Length: 238
Length: 238
Image (cartoon, rainbow over all chains, first blue to last red; front, side, top):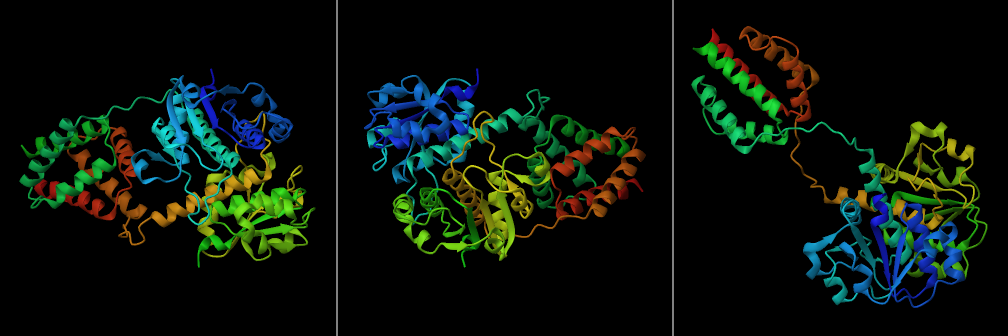
């Protein structure tokens, strides 16, 4: 099954039915179809249907819940949108990371992305029930993002992450990376040999070599090659 | 001056004034303020102002033009939104690349990002006048992105690219990279030495070494170090 199906967009106590319709349209343009509402203040009316445009099917299969807990009960990961609160610092993520995380975890189970009330967002109690808190890095002088616009941005980042995943070749040859121990052997071997050759006279050389090979994320076959080169020099020396 | 000021969002013959207001709000949430209209079908009316919410200032300084040419006359780069036309393949970019390109070029001069008519987009003649063509990778079964939503997505990617640029340390120590010629010298030197040592017997070794050092994007000081190591072995050999 398409993993996008496991992604549930949850709107809490939405005041304007038009926002529900616009959110449904925004979701569908990005391939999302699972919309959940918690105690909406207005029903899905003509205004909602008009604004959903060609996404009426999303509204037709909407799931309505009485409270937050019920709406996320079957979700393994819950991400709530939030302003940039200081006490949430360690769990704040931006839309891009939210898209990646959501798509990744949707392979295993349901993920809920929660959007709060138009004016007051999510309550503190609701925020506490979210694993991560999504913050859109808006203009600090004017951050008034419309609810459906926020749904559009998040749905877009989810689609981008999903497309990236589809485009990755599925059967990448597994690369074998050396253990730290094997790497340290190589560094020690290099150091002793080039000290004997009179080339290494201080710590700077090994620091530079470590930086280079760490940056390159040396693969096992490459490490074997470099070790072979050391041995070739040693053999010659004897 | 803030380079975001050089970014002009241009709406062509917009049918609904509400879309103009929503677009203004979308822009302002992402720090953009320069809106241009080409022959709008409806004036900026109460509906536009209501939907602009706190972005009335963007509407107040809007610039109105009679035609496409006048609206982009002072722009050094023009990007037009478009469906995925085959004949545009070589100039198609996605919103993320659009954001990066726009921000980069806005440091030098004006950049116009053009949004076509609600139903029919840009004409072929207009598309021809754009350097790049922006395509949002929407759901192939339902790509009906509302005009203001498209403005929101593009403005968001512009802001993300702009924030990335702000966050980059301005005084990064300049890294010096070797020329291809210098790299080729190193590879040739390595090959001849390790052939003499009896280690290199076929092409595989040099292919692996090239792959490793290309991936690492060898810096000049690192290249000098590796060349020094070759010379140390050679000296010993003599």
